[in-house]
Image (cartoon, rainbow, N blue to C red; front, side, top):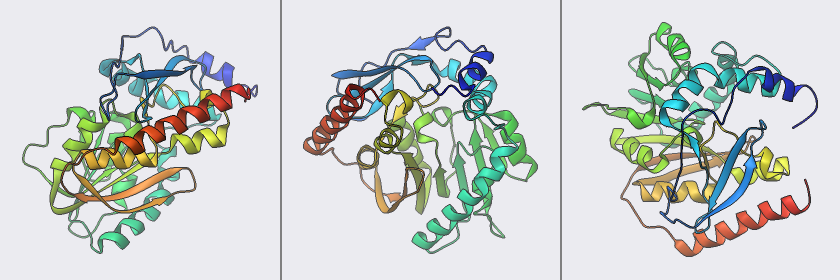
Length: 302
């Protein structure tokens, strides 16, 4: 962590990452393997947070990690002040709107170019203030935002969107279905990636699409040069393009189109398909390469 005052700003928050209730993850959420490798013990904020990687597929995840309830309190009281302290500028329900507008416009153009139509119903999971959902608004489009942060949902509600407070893992849609389901820069925050993706598959209307983007941890590692700078307590999971595509295959999605953004996010337009099996040979090669790179960076002392 740099010496530009970042450490003192984070310390001033008074958040004790080790104090709240925690839970252990005993098996990989993607392939089910129980051979887990400890990769690092202290995250980019300086918190004592252990990063594990699956030795068979290379999926990264925190364990132990805050419980569902502890993460709920974290996102309500700590998350925005923490990222503000880390970056040295105010990041809240107001500022994120300005930052998300360019992202939203570019994303909407990409998805429309792939699907060739305007969705009549949009569900944005982890949708914050609704800026991304609003980019898909048409004359007859219904927009719904699901997010755990009440202050950010209040902004979406004020803009006329339907809102649901809570986590994707707990969402019960009843009989509702959507033509477009968005999971934008959110998958890393989930506690059950596989279960949530299966649930999202069930939310698609016939002929509908989903968009999911994933911050590639290998890209982050190459950019930061150190595994400790590549993970953080607010991201329980760490994916790559390969593990993301494996998740989609396992949970009943077909990849229609993909692209990589300048900030290391792989974006995928998905359609409903059938659940498939993992290519375990490819996954093993991926795991070996990821772990080798992490060890090499650590040996270099970077």
